[in-house]
View 1 (cartoon, one colour):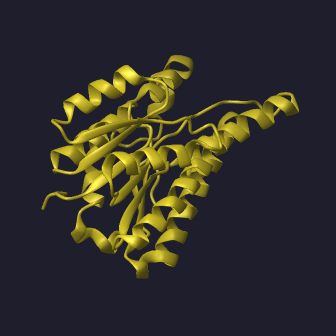
View 2: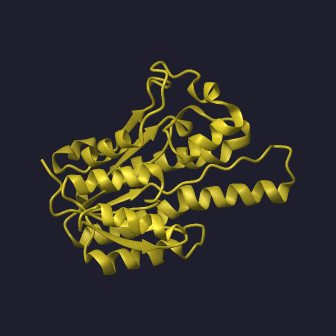
Length: 250
C-alpha cells in the first residue's frame, strides 16, 4: 500500500530524521512539504532528491507567529494537506544552578519549538482536516518524555512528555472526525543532536542501557513514520510507538 494522493507537511525537515522521513514518504508516493528554519541549501537539496514530490517552505518556529506563517505557506504550496509531522525540535542544556533569567530563557525556547509550535500546527491541522474529510498527525516525541531525563536537559524531556499527552488528547477527542494522531518515541538516533552529545559525554554514555548496543538509524524512523500514515493503520490512533532498542519498555 502506498501513500499516493497524500500531501504531508514535515517540520524540521533538514535534520537527519526529517530528511529520512521526507524521503520515506516520497518513496511511498506521498507529496511532501519540506519545512526549514535557516538551512535553505539543505532544503533545496532535499526537495531535489524527492523526484518532483516536494515543496520547500521556511518559517521560524521559535517565533510565536511561525506556525501560522508555516501553515499558510504549506497550504499555498500543496493546496490541501492530509498529514502533519511535528518533527522540529532542539535539545538544550541548562543547570539548575544557572541564573534564573538563563534558566527561563532555555525553558521558554525549548517549549516553544518542541511543544508549542506543534500545538499551534495541530490546531491548524485539525481545523483544515475537518473541512477535507480527515487527516493524520504524527508527533516526534522521545524516550526522554516517558522515563524522565537528566537534570541539565529537563526542559527537553518535559516538552516531549507534553507532546505525548497532546497526541493522546487529539486521538481521543478528534478520532470520531477522522482525525487521528500517533506519537513516535525514539531513544538515541544517529543524528546531529546525538553527535553533539557524544562529543561532550562520549559514545559509551549514549549507548549505556541499550540492549542492542547501537543507536537507531534515521531511516528506521522514516520507515515507521511512513507506515503510520498508511490509510490501513487508522487503529494506531493514540499509540506511542517506542523505537529505543529496548532501553525503555512499558
